[in-house]
Image (spheres, rainbow, N blue to C red):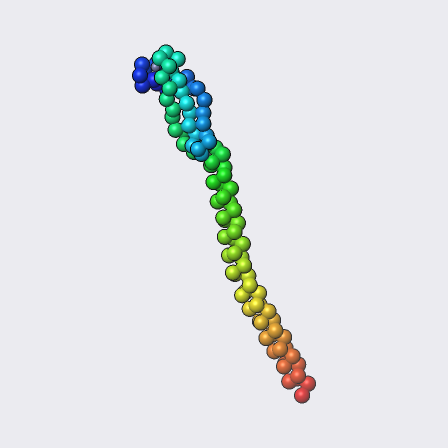
Length: 96
Ligand SMILES: [Zn+2]
């Protein structure tokens, strides 16, 4: 980073990610001017956002499965019952 005051190369003086942004601090060794640069989202912030997204997807998936599987299994059961009744009727019809 170039010092805005004297144009010299500034040296890194530290970083602060407590706000969720990766803020790099610089200090000019020539004139002592301090400045900072926003490097984007801090790594821990990106990771924690990712975890929140994963959790949300898992919940979405679970509720979607719940919605789909319940009526489907009822339907399948009803089909099985109907065909069993049909076979029984056919058997009875053959006997008499
Ligand atoms: Zn300077």
